[in-house]
Image (cartoon, rainbow, N blue to C red; front, side, top):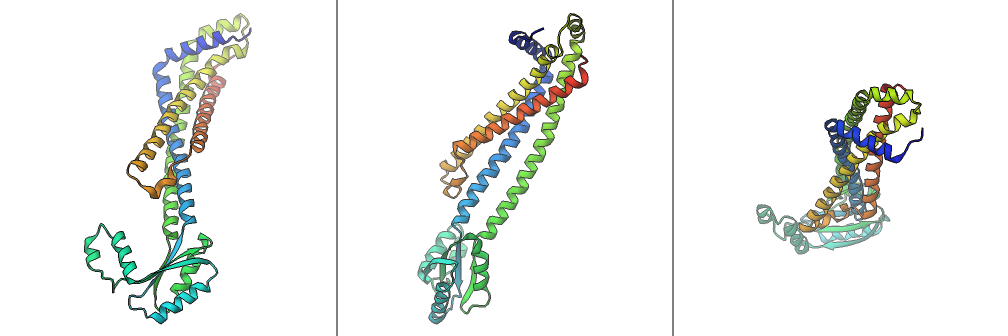
Length: 296
């Protein structure tokens, strides 16, 4: 007995409508879980892009003591010139350093009031050949070089951001996995109920010579449809989330997070992964249900 597309589509639609509340619950659970999966993937990609940009622009700042002598400044300048990891440096005198401090501390008038050009330390702002050299070079200048107050780089902040992101991504993925298992169970239960509701019809089809696949395919397609519909809903949610984040970054002109906006290619790949997972969940749930509850 051949399996026709019309028959499969009709039987699948009938099963979905007959158990519509259970099917809707499964679809919504798949949508929520896959939205979390997609969000976790987008978060990972966005952070990696942003950290990559920051890492390529990692600079070393060597702050001099406020009372450092010109001889000490010259000595530090000479040490910088002899450090192969440093490509170039710019020197900010007291006035320039004070102007920069006022910009950085614009939201803290009390701190600005406590500073004067004379008490603001001068600073060397240096670019490195490799971001990985920042800690080593900073240690060199922090090891008792006369006139140097402190050498700093944002590499530690970048590492902390990466660690926090990893933890957040792990939490999202754990929650998503729990929900995916729940959705798989819901799909399985929906198929089980459909099989139970049509047990007499299945018995009749077996008596008239229907093949195993002829009986199984509508039930398996039912699970596939639930997984795909949930995945498509998740695709819309993830897309809207990405559009919202991009709009906020542009609207509020947060240029420092510009690299966090993913290109279309990365977004499309993420959405395809979400759909693929939805298909796998739907097929897995229906396959287990058919194998376990459909006696053909």
